[in-house]
Length: 88
Image 1 (spheres, rainbow, N blue to C red):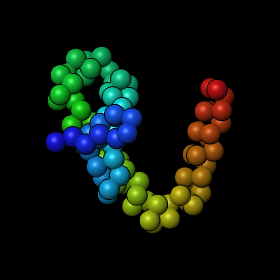
Image 2: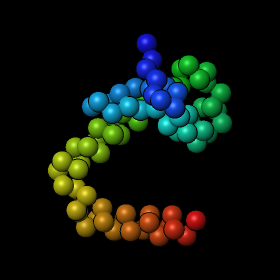
Image 3: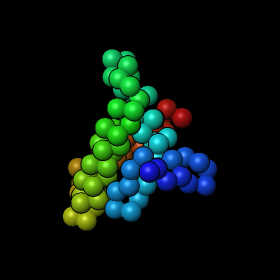
Image 4: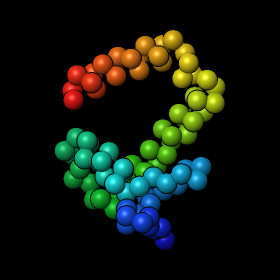
């Protein structure tokens, strides 16, 4: 049974009490190579929701370990920030 939020964006999965919205999953799917996008959406949504959940869990553990303060992480964030600002 899928829950819905006020904006009617259904919850595809929940990780540690935080929803993974269908729109987030569909955004990830839209970035997949064409051959994967031909897989039925009913198959892709749960698979991609599971991947998003796994990434969130790993990120949560990394934050708990303080990795956001690691010099390599800081350097990579700065590089991505410059790329994003340049794209805007």
